[in-house]
Image 1 (cartoon, rainbow, N blue to C red):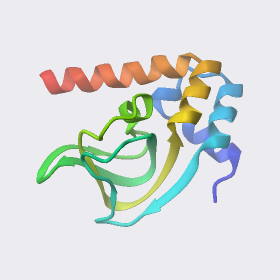
Image 2: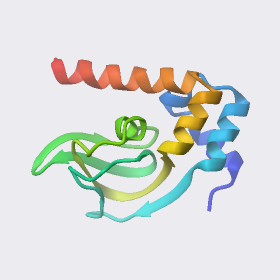
Image 3: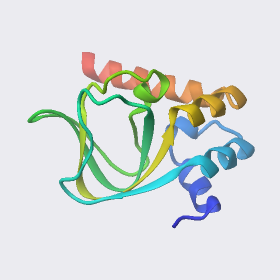
Image 4: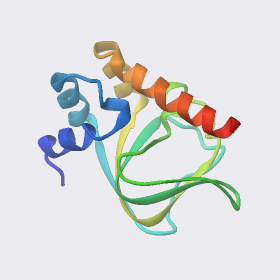
Length: 137
């Protein structure tokens, strides 16, 4: 089990949280839930109702639509942020490729964090813009 201080150090390396204050990092770290997953394990499936974002701490995950791989994500990367902001059905599935340690934050906690630290919303917007640019190239 990770200590709060360890979670804060991890969050400092995650783009979404890079501009947040120390107090904000502590607030975020206290609501993160650890998820351990093994290769082949499905984190969520396309069409599932989404309500959480995930941060990859260790290992890799594959974002996919059936057999088509959309992205492979590793330590420091985030997924599920769109559904955490707007709980709608997931647009893709995510499966574990290498044994993974993930940190999960629910949408209620995310909305509260954004209310207190708007720079988190700016970080999520940056991630979403980057992904949109990559898809259109």
